[in-house]
Length: 283
Length: 275
Image (tube, rainbow over all chains, first blue to last red; front, side):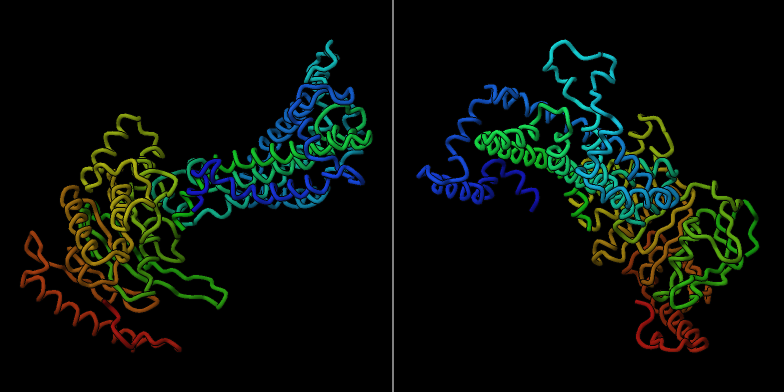
C-alpha cells in the first residue's frame, strides 16, 4: 500500500491537493470584490512569491530569508539528530541508561520552545556562529554565518531532539526477541547485535522520529526568530510583515513554510520507506 | 550412558528448569540426564508443553538450567563449541537478503570477505537456494525461508545443529522435502543433530535415536534407537512397521505418564498426544 503511494509521484499527490486548492479558490472568491476583506487576494500573494529576489521592506528578499531559515533549521535538526539518535539507541539498549536519562527527558520535553526564549537569551545573548568560529563579525552584513544565532540553534535543537530520542528508544525496545536470540546463537556479540540487529530494527522508528522532528523544527522556527536582534528569516518575516501590515508578504511566507515543511517530511518518508516496507511485511 | 569422553558431544546431568510466572512457579522441565554421541541424529519427541523447546534452548545456552549441568564437547562454559540453531519460523532478519542472512554468522566471526563469499555460495548450492541470494525473506515462501534458516545455521560448519520444530508450520509436501534435505546435510557433514518435534513420523524418518519426553515437567520416559536400512523411504515396509509399533508404544507410555502425574484442570489425557 505504502509502496504504491510513493511510486505515484506527483500524479499521486494531486488528489491530496484538493483541500488546499479548494481553500485557495474560496479565498480568491472572497477577496475578489476588494472591499472589506482582511486578507489580500491570492494574486497579490502570488506576486510576492513569483519575485523571490526582490527586497521586501528592507528586510532582504524572500529567497534570502528562506535560505537563512533553512540553514538554521538544518543546523538545529542535525544537532538534534547527532544527539537524539545515539541517546535514543543507548536508552533503548540499556536499562541503566534508560533509568538514568528518562526523568531528565520527561522533565525537559514539555518545555516549549517559546518558554525557552528567555533562557536562550541568558545563555547565548546574541552570539552568532561567525563569532563562535572566531571570525568576528564578517565584513558583509548579510553573510549567512552572521545570521546564525546560537540561541536559535539551541531552541531548534530543543524542539527537534525529543521526538528523535523517544522514537529511537521505542524502536530499539520493540526489537523482536527472536531476532536477538537468533543473532546470539549465530555467534554475535553484544556490539555486533547492537549494530546489526538493534539499529536496523529501529530504523523505521528512527525515520519516523526524524520526520516528527523536522516538522517540529519548522514549527519552532517562528519562535526562534523572535529572539531579540533577529532581522532575517522566514519566521522573522512573518511577524515583521504583520507589524507593517504587509499581509501579502505574510501569507507568502506561510505558504512557503507549508510547502518546504511538507517536502522535507516526504523526503524523509521516502528514505525510510524501504526499511518500513521490509519490516511491516514480516509482521 | 557411560560413553568414552571423546565420543560424547552433549552431556546433561539432572537438568531442570523452573519458570517464575505471575500465576506461580511452573516446573517446565526435568530433571533429565542424557548423553548424545558425536555425529548422531537425535529427535526429541514429546507432547505440547513438555519442555522440549526449553531443553533445546538450554543446550544452546539461551537459557541457564536452574539445577544440574550441561556439557558441550566436554566444556561447560559458554565459549564452547560451534552451535547452529534453527527456530520454528520468522527468525530470519527481514532487513537482510538471503545472502545477508547467511553471511551474518560469518561476519560476526570476522572471517575474511573471500572466505565468506565462498562459504555462502557453497551452502546456497547445498540447500538448493541458488539464484535466491539477493531475495528478501518476505519474498520467499515459508519453505524457502526455512531453507535459508537451515543454510544460515550450517554455514559456520557447527559441531552441533539444534532444530526446534523447524518444519512444523509447513505443508506436508514441503516439510518432507526439507526433511530429506536435512538428512542429506547430515549425511554429508556428520554434524551432531538434536531435532525437536511433536510429529512421530518426522522423528522416525529422521532420527538415529528418539528421546521421548513425558508431560510437563518433561522427563525422559523412553529412549529408542531407530534402525532402518539406508536410504530411508517412507513407503518401505520396515519404516511403516516401525512407525506403527513406536506410535503405539509411545502413546501408551505418554498416557501412563499422564495418569501417574495428574495435574488439576488439565485435559491432556484426552485425545492424541502425538500427531
